[in-house]
Length: 484
Ligand SMILES: [Ca+2]
Ligand SMILES: [Ca+2]
Ligand SMILES: [Ca+2]
Image: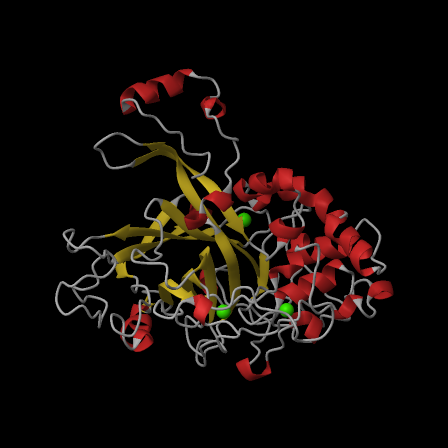
């Protein structure tokens, strides 16, 4: 576990007194001070999505999705994956442009045990060993959660939107969890008092990418839509999805009708936080105490992976977007662009890369490419890294969505928010190489055609209804038996 946890074999009270007397108690730990999120998978953000709901009849709503806990092997039981009861999972909205959250949706989980006298755990033979609905007694470790809306505009006003909502069990296999989506997946979509919906649970990892890209851009296919290998095929992820009325997100609590409305753009990011002290004592349950500390954060995809340098990556995870000026130099002169020049032998735009600052940190202005709308934010003049969603840009029907978003002429997609459909790897490669209309001299082949050769999710297209993400891959069919 990460360094934020200080451990003691002694008595808790004695430990706390000792800690309070030390001027820098965290540095007294034998670990690095920054949280190492790669060692703390249950608090690790994987992807954040924000888009106007594409389900018919839901035009007045925005869907926000925060995924956590990467690369889950579907057969990874018998405990399987569930949210961490000691983590505070949050989706945050900035609607004033200062990098501070104005609206927060907070999710806190609680796992119960129906029968502790059983060998398996997640499921049990409490009745007939088949989990046929969410309240089935054979679902032996049901996890429930609460949803809270915190309104930053009104100080810390907090509204409990829902509580006691059951997450579905893992998709264990056809014997224990038959007809998974009908019996357990869709029934775990709950209506909220504001007219929206919420879901939390395992889902297929829809994000597709050839991770060979991290082998010094060792792409199997540099241009073209196929030839890569989807490294996440068959894995699951833990998803929190919430659908809320547009008017609940905007600064003036209205639903803007024009994309040039100054209230039309909202910033979106997701975080995970832990309490800063963990106490482990013999014969006592683990106790987490003291202040909450953010250990993971995700707005735009791939920023911390490919833009932020190693010695800032942990700090970046702990920062609020209001403090992102520290990362600006790395966006203005990114190392990855130099690597592209080295590996591909292509010309890249010289620093300062104001094109990348616009895409990731200040918003894309209205121009000949974007038409009368885009994501220029009511900025305070400093960079804030998060998704920027213009909630007044018309929805693109699912059948017409272009996976390249704005670069494919589909202004409803990334970097206008992020839809699950969007091929952000290809978009980010091209943006980094300057292969976009914002840098005309490098908007040439191959810069504007770079790809990882994976252009769709091999598990199939998204659902056409909330929560859009596909049901989780089942554990009785291990990922290793399911490869091409
Ligand atoms: Ca704000
Ligand atoms: Ca997948
Ligand atoms: Ca791709």
